[in-house]
Length: 196
Image 1 (tube, rainbow, N blue to C red):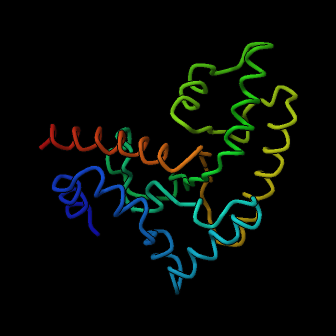
Image 2 (cartoon, rainbow, N blue to C red; image 1 turned 180 degrees about the vertical axis):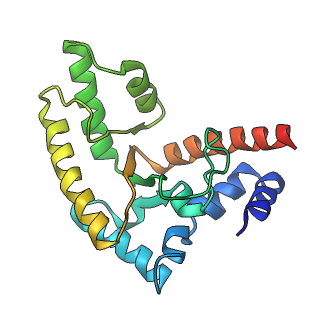
């Protein structure tokens, strides 16, 4: 889909319709443009993550411009996926979410937690986001997760020929995923309406 059609779809459909069509659908722009059998490629991608992170297959999704070609982030205003774009993943796991959010809670009760406001806002919204460079404060849960994810991301990039940084969020449940993305789509629709 070209940018004009994508923008028109956003303007003429509800947040929920956009979310279900572009974020939950099986079409992934990255695989459509980088493989022979995009549906099988996406399935293999999810199986690889499922096996390596012990996450159910259906609790994994690609989002962002790798999924849709154009970013739905209100901060990126339909920016097209390019060599500088990140590859964004959703992982839904209540147990991992609880483990990591409790790790942050424990750390913050003992010492200063860098970016406390951002991390607590994320937890309030039902997700945690951890970068490879984030401090672990000696917390075993954070150390173990970062060790696992670093190895996994290297293997994922090689196996699926991904030349982009891989980012991910771990959500507590699908309702939190939906709430977060509907809010972003609503903001994007408002910006598009104001500029036209």
